[in-house]
Image (cartoon, rainbow, N blue to C red; front, top):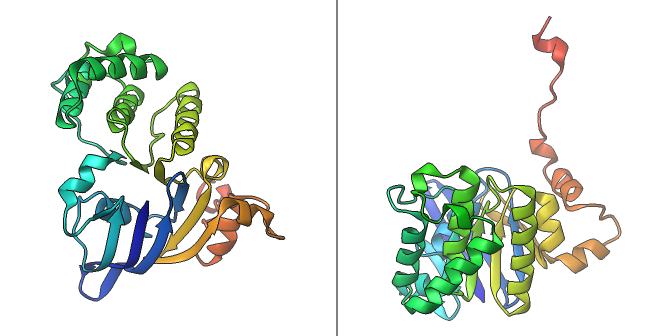
Length: 252
């Protein structure tokens, strides 16, 4: 469970990156959290994962008050950040062993999970490679595995599909759906609206640090004028429409 009440974050005094947002995500829900660049998505994730302080309001992750005990939060969550700094000098196995050790996994359990996920996501052949020498897609698979390996109650995903091939994307989406069936709470930030629409059970749209929409996916799809999440998002952001490229305006 994730519960946010009147959450405020300011980077500069006169402008709020998060301007009193409130929402709740229950166990077993996959929440698609969407918005344009600068809307406040990554700020929200960093606060909820205990990586960033905030200026007002309340954030509860699981049963833990983030402000009072952000170290405890880190024990119960898995986190795939948009841009991760991995230990490039470590091998893939060494990195995953480090992650598992931090979460106090038994050696036999840890090894079994490393082997399982490396086969599932098809990176078993690079387990002995240094992370600095593997492709972007394989780094992303390692990062996802490190977030899943301790079987967290709550999963935070910030653009988790970066660099993944089609097969890995299909596998990942299936994993997320299965985790939700087991009661895991999943907070999913992405610009890939078709993916969000397929797998989410709840949609939250944030704009300029404020919640603009909070609805179950089922309710949203049953509304009279709904055609797709992409069209809905476009219609809600008509004031920020994408620019039109005309070849003749710039090229002879």
